[in-house]
Image (cartoon, rainbow, N blue to C red; front, side, top):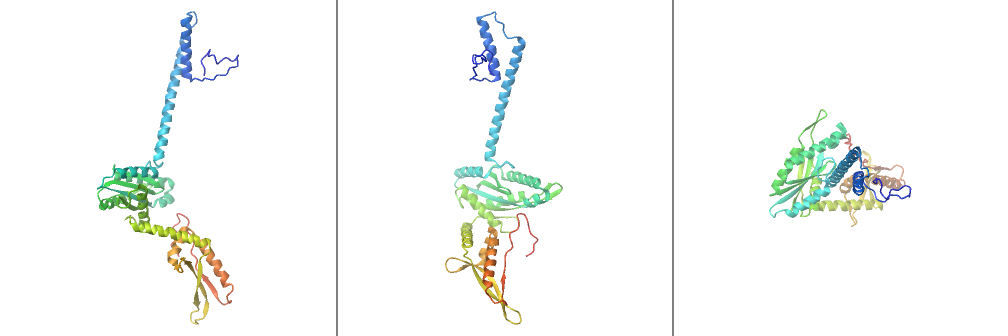
Amino acid sequence: FLPPGHPECCPKRGIRPRVRYSIPTACIAWMASCEIARADDPTLPGPSFAAIVTLGTIAIAGLVMAFLQQRRAAAATARARFFGHHEVMTGLFNQSHFLDELRGAMERRRPHEHIAVFAIDLEGVRDVNDLLGNAAGDTIIRFTARALERVSGSKAIVARLSGDNFAVARLGLRNVQDATSFAATLLEAISQPHRLNGHEVTLSARIGVALAPDDSEEAAHLLKAAGLALDRACLGTGSGFTLFEKSFERALQERRELEAKIRETLENGGFDLHFQPLFRAGSNRLAGFEALLRMPDGQGGFIPPVKFIPVAEEMGLIVEIGDWVLRRACMLAAHWPDHLSIAVKLSPPPLPAGDKGSGGP
């Protein structure tokens, strides 16, 4: 919008405007130009009262709209900044900001103080989703977030790391006993029953605990240590917590090396089959052989199946390994006498996520 009479608004001259004004600015500029013109020539007519009122109203409305737009833009910026640091569903810190806050707390830590990080895994959220729907599961997640904030107090940093995983950093602890006592407090808060859609829902949890400076003096490594302790806690049954130990890191390293070895052996066809003879009961005659899978350790020996088979199952490679065993065993048995049989034990494929199975073999 350009004020009337502006030199760049002459359609006859074909001049297109280069300078643009907002509506309030244009109104005020037009009225000001009228008053300047009348000062030079009093005979010129001034703007009517109605025009002044109308244009004044437009100007005020425009200023109000500009103010509201500025407020909305500021609110949108603040919201984007908030969710850059916080998780959307619960409003708790996300993992990145949790680590930032933890780093600051560790830098301010006094020599006699400890900081404990609690990695928390909720048990039962998937069952709530299956029974009552995802909305009820989301409600349980929010209930848990509020419970963790309530019992943690002002000397704690609370975050939601993912789905049903949370983290709490408790500041200013005196010793390990304070940390274990607070872990018990967290478990009690999480296990409080909730009433949802006519059902009483009670969750349990597993917690891994790591302390600074004993276990680490670096924020990311301390959270990792708490996660390793959580993995160990999840091997047990029911609720409970586990304190981090240095041996957990060695076990993790050995596990990663074994996983890499299993992948390499499968890709290169490096597994071996040993055959155990099977005899008919009563006659003691050879009936066939059972194929036994063996995995070379690279040093002339073999890794026990009880060690690598469960890992292969957890990695989702057991079906591929079973296919290799079956093909290899049948290929070798094809050259045997007809009266000899071959037996191959196969592990079942992994159950889909959320499927608890029927409890059978």
